Amino acid sequence: MQPKIKISLFIVGGICLFLFFSSPNKLVVDELGNIKGITNKAREIVQGKKFWRRQGLKADEDLKWYLEQPKREAKSEAEWNALVRELKEEDEKLYREYPEMRPSKAEQLAEELREKADRIEEEEHKKEDEKWRKKEIAKLHVIIGVITNKINQY
Image (cartoon, rainbow, N blue to C red; front, side, top):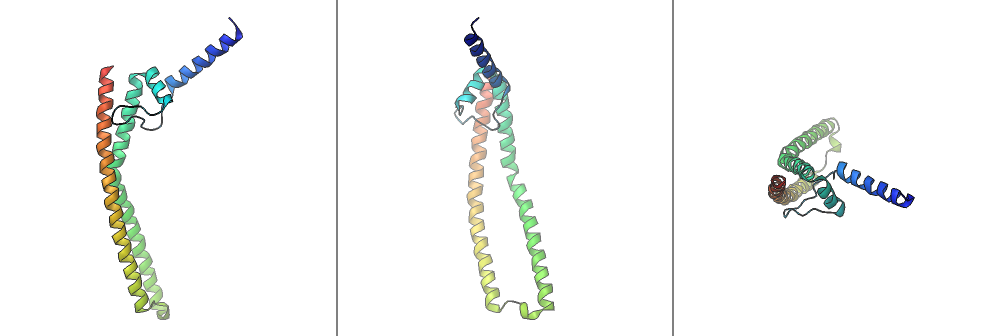
């Protein structure tokens, strides 16, 4: 066998091994069952059902992440609120010890208004994030159904 043919077979074999054993680290299937990327399409051809099972696991993992997001955010918000309370308590201690450092009534009112504006903006962001999260969850349910059908076809 000629050296060029040996090298070509070696390269093709290496590519096939790569495609057989590798896996994308993310979900690469959309709601229509389309696979994103030529490498991932080749993986599906080489791996078959194994590719779809791995994608199913990834879709389940992504879905779980989105479903648990409110719990993570609530925990983070509670930690943030505790920190803010602690800082305000420290400020009050400082003001009792050094009353001249206390902000004026106008400065206090301005700070309260800034905090209120921040809360209003934050609530709007939360509403938008929640819409997006629900859309992603619905999309993942569809993708999981598509993947389940692909697995059952094998």
